[in-house]
Every structure is written in C-alpha cells, then in structure tokens.
Length: 266
Ligand code: URA
Image 1 (tube, helix red, strand yellow):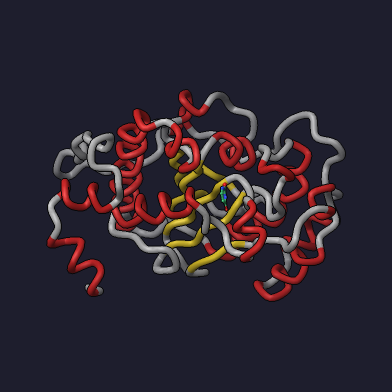
Image 2: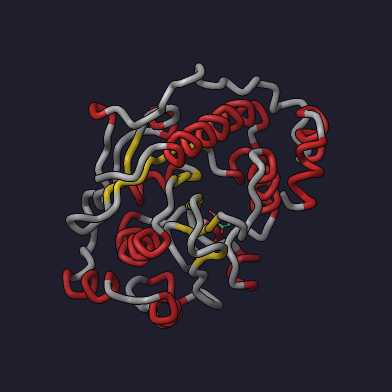
C-alpha cells in the first residue's frame, strides 16, 4: 500500500470528503452490493459503441483502419499532426491523454481547456483538481492504474462543447487508446464524452446508473463496462449533484471489483 493509500485509509469518510473540499455535498452512503452479488451489465441494457448520427463528413474508412493499427508513439505523433477537423487551427498542441497505459480505469472527459492546451495534459485546471479529488475518494490516483483522456484532443475555442463532427473525427484516436489500454472499466465524464463513446443515446440523467458496455469500433474488439457520471466542471457549478456523482463513483468501484474478481472470458 502506498503512503497516500495508507493515509487515506486512516482518514474517516468525513475527513476524506473534507480534504476533497466536498464535505457537505458528498453525503450519500456507499451502497455496497450484498455479499456474493456479482455486478455484470444486463443484456437488455447494453449500448453498443457507435458514432453519433449526422456526421459531417464521416472519417474515411482507411483513416480509421490506419489509426487502428498505430502503436503508442505513432498514435502520439499522429494526434500531434492531426488536421482532421477545424480544432487544429487554434490549438497550441494536441492533448492525447495521461496516465498508466495498462490501467484498469479509463476516465474520458470532453476536451482540453485553456490550461490543458498550454500544458499538454488533460484535466490540469480547476476541473482537473476536482477530478483528482474524486479519484482519491475511491482510492485512485492519476497515473496509477488510471488513464485520463478526452473525446477530442484539441481545445474547442472558448472551451465550448465539441461538435458531433469534431468528436467523430477524433473517435478513431479514442478507440485506439481504448484498444491499447484495454481498461476494465470506462468512466465517461459528462454528456459529450457519453455521446462520443456511446453515440446519441439520451440525456446524462438517463444514462447515469445504467449498465452500459463499450464495444470496440472494430469487430472482435473488447467489451468494457461503462459508467456515466457528471463532468467535474459541471460539478464545480452545481454542488447538489456532487452527491449523485459520489453515488456513481461508488457504483463504478463496485463494478470494477466485480469485473476484476470475475474469471477471464473463454
Ligand atoms: N475538461 C475536460 O473535459 N477535459 C479536460 O482535459 C479539461 C477540462
């Protein structure tokens, strides 16, 4: 156990949440599954990964196939050089992602903001600080069994929400990251990330708490459980929903434990 984990283990829930700056809003109790319960996505709730409708224009099949064959250094270079959508015009740099490339946990946000664009790392601004606190609350740490990426790799001007076409242009990169990392669990932060990974499947409220599965863009790809929760930037503005996000994190942790304990497929 790391020093950080030992210290966190020694803290009470209230102390931990206070450390996150979230003592009052994060007040729900963790709902532990009954002993012996195995959480698996129910078949009727599986949502396949697909691209959002109405894209303009769809990424060429050969571009997708090319990206699907890249290794990490090639992927980094390809993202740095990418000109597939208009976001490349105003970026300082593309932001691929950060963390453990063999992580069990993959967190996906929307797109880089000003600080991320300047530093080349996702979630380093105020929303990133909250994300780090959320990770710590479930005993995770950036870079340690956790990888953090975004639906789009270049900053949308004025930090606007990325458009469907921009997310579609970037989707082959995100799909390649997922295929390389092979996480055991994907946590989608906010509606843009949910739309990018799952397609246009409903409001954030309708996706929270559901058993969802990412299926790779290519046949035979991995099937990975997905948890959808609020984006940290939204939580910074909307204190009341932190309790719901805490619920989602507890669910994600229970799901990860169940997936890890399950025998390998086959
Ligand atoms: N918001 C995001 O969605 N991603 C970042 O990297 C930073 C803020």
